[in-house]
Amino acid sequence: MRLFISVLLVACAFAQTPYDTTIKPSTTSRDIPVNRGSAALWQSLKKLHTRASLIMITAHPDDEDGGMLTYESRGKGTRVALLTLNRGEGGANVMSPDYFDALGLVRTQELLEAGRYYGVDQYWTRVVDYGFSKTMEESIKSWTRDRVLYDVVRVVRVVRPLVITSVFIGGPSDGHGNHQTAGAMAQAVFKAAGDPNVFPDQIRAGLESLGRR
Image (spheres, rainbow, N blue to C red):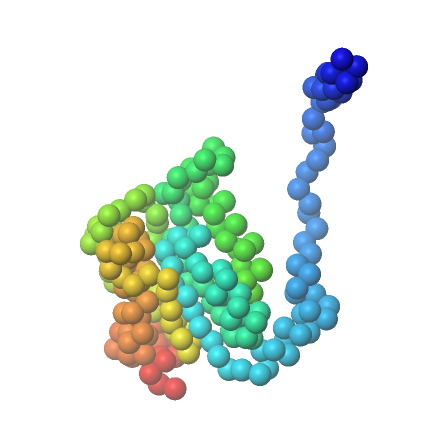
């Protein structure tokens, strides 16, 4: 009985304690431990042992293979980039009241934060996540193929990776139409980025074609 009364009094005390509204996000930007001190030096030395580089192409934030990206970047010293087609604006959300543009901002920040741990450079295209689609044809109809490929080619020409990869294959087994499009773009860009006749305006603007090394 005494124990019950004690627990009840403690619960009442906590119930009457007002929330501390003075707590605010930190304005101090400090890099994560693995990017500081001796760990950062080790990472730099690791990258001197290889010329390997790769880019992974996905559709939404959370599609990436974080384990593989980290293994390549942190473990092998590979120069790694992540290209995400859109920012996940059309996704579901049970964590907060954010939807559409607000959700896209949240998911973008989450992916950027994850990228600090992966050790990758990040890029996006201009297409918008309009919601779930069943086929690649539906996604392409909304985005147009050349618009997506243009942005993907541009990033690949800037990054100049030795390897282009994706977690998707560009077929129905990928599920979401955006996923299928990401897989198809990863294959199409392999040749397109190295062809100076594809989007020549990019080359005239100063982006060297991979095919002219």
